[in-house]
Structures are given as C-alpha cells and as structure tokens.
Image (tube, rainbow, N blue to C red; front, top):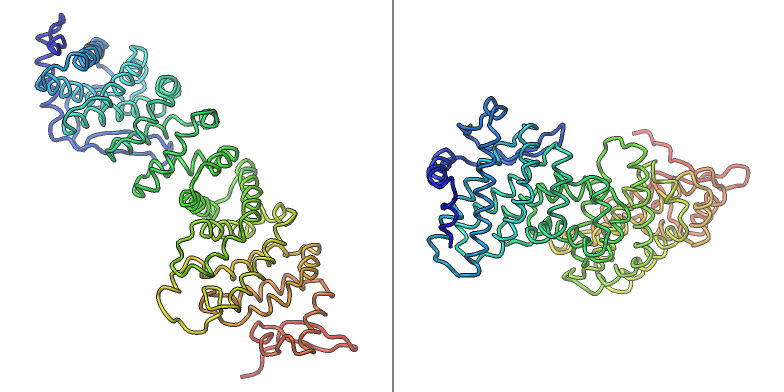
Length: 494
C-alpha cells in the first residue's frame, strides 16, 4: 500500500518535508533558460527558491539528497505496488504530490552547480528518476496530478545534465532510446518540450551517430514530427539544426523514412540553414557538400513530379511540392562558392534542370495553368501557388551551374537550352524576376564563349530572338568584321 512511503524510519521527516517543499515551491513559475554562449539549458523559477539559492547550493548536505533519493525510491516501490493492488486514489494523489515536490527541489539544486550535479549522479538519482518516469507514464490517474511530477522530473534530468559530460553520458545510458520514445509522443506539450530539452542537452556527434542504429532512428523521426506539430518548440528546432543536420548519413536515412509532407519540413529547415550568411568551417563545408550531392540526386529522380501542378489547381500534390523545395535548396547551395564547384561537376543535374524547364514551359503553352506566362494578376490563388517562381528558379540554377564553366556552357548549347531561356525572358506574374534571372543566365552562358554568343546573334538575325527582348535584358547585337557580337546595351542619352 502507498502508506509504505511514510512508514520507513524517516516517517515524521517525510510528512513535514512534503509540507515544507510544497510551501517553498508554491507560486514559482518555471522558466526554461538557454545560455547563448554555452548552449546549456536550465529550468529555474522566477522567484528565488529560498532553500536553494546559489549561495546555499554549495553547502547543501549530502544527507538531504540521500533523504530525497530514499523518498523517490519508496515512491517508486509504492507506485509499482499500487498498480498491482489498485489501491485508493487518495493515496496515489499524495504520492504524486510528494514526487513532484522532490523533483522541484532537485531541479533547482542542479542549476549551474557542478558539485550538486556530481553528487546527485553519484547517489544514483539519474537512474532512479528515469525508472520513476517510466512508471508515471503508465499510470491511469488525473492529469493535473500526474503532469507536475512528469514535467518536474524531466526538468531535473535536463538540469543535472546541463554542461556536465559525465551526467550526460550517465543519463544517455539510462534513458536512450526508450525514455525519449515515450516522452516525445506524450499528449502534453510541456512534457514533449522538456523531453526535447533533455535530448538536446545530451546530444553530441557520437550520440547522433547512435541514432542510425536499428530502432533508434525513430527518435529523430519523432523530433521532426514534434517540430511540424509544435512550431513554437525551440528545442526540437535546435535538435534538428544543431545536431541532426550535421550528420549527412542520418539525413539520408531520415529522408527515406519521411512522408512527403515531412520531407518538405526537413527541406525548409535545410534551406534556412543554408541561407545563413555566417561563415562556416571546413567540417561544415564538407557536411554541406554531402547534403548537396544527396539533394541533387533526389531532384534528378523526382523533378518530373512538379508537372502534376499543371493539373492540380489546388496545389495539393505533396511530391510535387518536395520538388519545388529541392530546387529552392539547390539554388541556395549553388549561390555559395563553397558548393558551386561540386554541383557543377555532378553528372545529370544540369540536364535535369534544362529538361524540366522545357517540360514546364511546354505544359504552360499547352493549357492554362500555373506554368502559363501571365501579365496580370488574376487571383490570389495563383499568386500563392507553391509553383509560382519555379521556372525562375530553374533558370537561376542553370545560370549558376554555368558560371565560369565552359563545359556546362557548351552542354546547355547542345541541349538547346539557350533559345528556351530566351523564350522565358518576358514579364510573367507566375514567375517573378524571371527576366532578371534570364539576363543572369545568358550572361553566364556567353561569358568567354563565342559559340553561344554567335548562336544568340544568329537567332536575332533570323528573327527568333527579338531585339526588343534582348534590349529588355540589357543586351544588344553588334556587327564587327562581318561577325555578330552580343554585348551589354549602351545607355541612350535621356
């Protein structure tokens, strides 16, 4: 029976201790704080906790923590007994209150206090807490009693591991992967958020590698799903950006298991990461290079899926949306000198981009759809369509891949991509800035490439490339010694 919690040798102490902890903890609102410099996270209360202020943490007697350990151990045994015997709700309620107050005390004792972190770990409070959390998860009681104990226990685990490698390793050994799989799928948002905090605190490159082992990948999958469902969850975002995206092999394994909607979410996070303008080291450049190669292969495999948008006015096709996001990421990656050379050398990427531009351009001419050039906004639906700007980005990608690269310039010539780009240089509300990207691409295609210059000059002479179109792109044709030369247009006096 639960009365055994209070029947050990410290019975009078336990009863008074519960009242004391309840009084001291009353009215405290918990904050989850992450240091910008150390990236350590702590749970603390707005109001200074009387018995555990910083000046008092260092002198706390070990016997106090031993008493707390004894109470939690007794609570674990009592809960196990109650599950077997179906004891009264009143006794369960009292036990849960005591557990919550004990964890509040332990949580605050660990904040920026390495001495207490080591002491509590050596006493075995990490394994005791993990075991107790698993018991709490299986209890069928009122949530208003269960949730405080669960939340405070996870906050304690986060605090005892913060900035303490030994505690992180001990917690990982006890909790991974079962505790994370349990708490990441819990119905309470705060329990999920605190679980993400604990996971973020423990992760390092070696532990991220363990996520690749059979059965462990589910932890990474649940983290990404938490981010999709709880966009305000900072911890899940940090786990993905600071840890999961730093392991290319994990990204590949994760991508294969994701639904198309989840792939879109992952690609959007990668796009945000790639778009950061901060300088990166050699290791991160290598990581980005692996991502670039992998995503280029994904784009080549499914670029044709975007054509489904031609027959989907509601833009509900998620596989087509994946293609759009893949192109967005590749455009950003090729805009970085660190990845441009690698992507320019990839076989098949440039051909896929030119072929996709040709197919979407043809689809827009055969019927009225999102790929059809329009010169006036006809409705909000078209403006918000995910494929708006797709052809612009294809031309941007082609231009990037041809930047100071004679082999790719010639390849576009052979693929008859230059007339195709010129045919897409008019104003198009479905493709903002397409004219500017066409200018950029033509410049990169003709730079120190006489054959491409002569092709464009010949197209204008045959009437296949209008002078007005070239003029709108800032280009003009000039005859020199019987040859047609493409060059930047001279400004006319106003």
